[in-house]
Length: 234
Image (cartoon, rainbow, N blue to C red):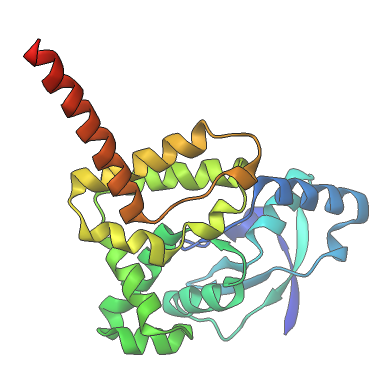
């Protein structure tokens, strides 16, 4: 792959930046760059579309370099990426290992569903199965309030409970689309409260299935109703 030098200020952020790096890992990356130089880490990959240079792979490395007051970096130049569909597909292929934001992945997949019209074609170009594509399509249908709370959950998990980023998967979230918007918000609020005020030891925290949470919420609501009924009898 061809290598080019470029000013960080001349790089455009990828509109489909779905990869999430835990805060501790990002801090370690910054320390490595400051101690050993940017040249000691794998080169980011960029592409040129409509006369603009977009980051394909390496957002965290470039952000860490910028925070370390580095102005110019060397990058691999992906000359086969010539349009936004290429950018989406190759961003996914190069970043599929690690933690991801399902909301952004859903936006990516749905962009290509509009172009390719069916899940089989989308699954083929992304190199995944149709079930994975289906789960991301369903996430697109979640209520906006639900998505807003999910994003809060992702942000807290990135800072506090790194391993939860793996549990918040497309398959996990897609089942939310099967319940009403009100129930969706109740479920994600429940999760958010649990991780926001959970124990410091992350091994004590996990996210149950959506239906386990719904059952737990129902139990709590039923208990409240029983107490209210008993009070009214007095």
